[in-house]
Image 1 (tube, rainbow, N blue to C red):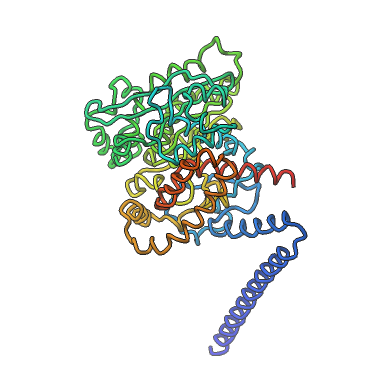
Image 2: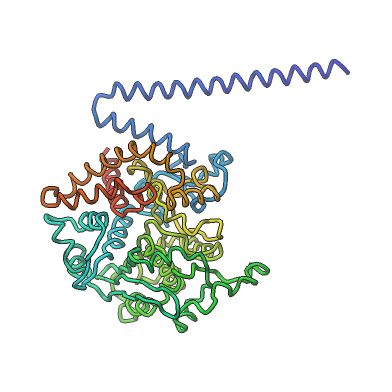
Length: 509
């Protein structure tokens, strides 16, 4: 019996040696690849070639860090952001995300940079209106973003014009109605502003972002209500004790439970349903407009406005779904949701129902619906309400890394944000816990931020007549914690513009 055992041991030792040799060869091969790429960069003949090689190396690192797909043709829908799977357990076949590229964006149901930029501009321009006291006390970052999006020779003056004039002059849009619902109705804080505008080929529904204490009360609400928009429209709100209704069914008979939406966002949305019906749904369903040009429908928002806009988008998607899956229906070219810094708006069932609608359209080859959710670096608002409270994100996550170095679609962020680590991130940002750690890194972060801020503002905004405003924006950026700094709309817009420029250059190469 000793002979066979000895042979087995020898075989095991041989296999171990062979495995070690193979891993050693693989390590050397990777080392040689790294060295050769560094030599290529060092010996590059032109600056543009050097930049391209540096970008390629950076892309490789990001692909491994976020478990992105390497095959440009094998793109599949990824999990929602901040899910709990371990990054090391994902094989290459399981990798869902990818770096943004124009080639991939042509696929059915994909996000597109031009639509993201347009949606982001429409989301932020809702910060103003046609009233006399518009922009009475705007924050410096709000004005910087507004001046960036209006552009022109004198953006500071243009940004102060009434909203209807800005939309007409810069975007060829006519305002159909202004949304302005504010106060405490039936004991609930409601503060919803925005607008609906349109032209021959576009309809825009935009909700304003967080500006008042009532808005922040909405953000801090962690309850949910059953998704019954048709019934609740007549009631005027989500219902008395709506946060408690339906939980028995949800816990004991989950398959029979109704989808649930965050109560505060849902209540704010309900007050806008009549306007959505009149200015969005009815024109699209009107038989007299049968031969009209197909329209792109943008439902957009930033921060609190993003949450309300996602719920509004889901309402419109449900109402138009039977028509959208009919190839002969030509009134809608594409139904597009673009949000930035969006909180979670519904439970898992709510997400699954809406995802199923979009997947069904895509599987039929109908590129008619997409939800694009933008998140920049350490933006704190997408973490609310925390994922441990059963709320879920919707749609395609477009994640922008620090300083806009990379833009990824559906990356794996589980290494960065596990369930309870997310709570820690929120507490650190809101209550400034671990203050010493933050202060130690503050100088380095501020130096990087200010270099980026100064470069962008010098190139994009005329400095001399606006020196005081620019300084105020720089000071606001310098003093803000990273989670708040990265929530500023200016950074979303500037890095999306950067992405478009990079994609244009790449097509020329």
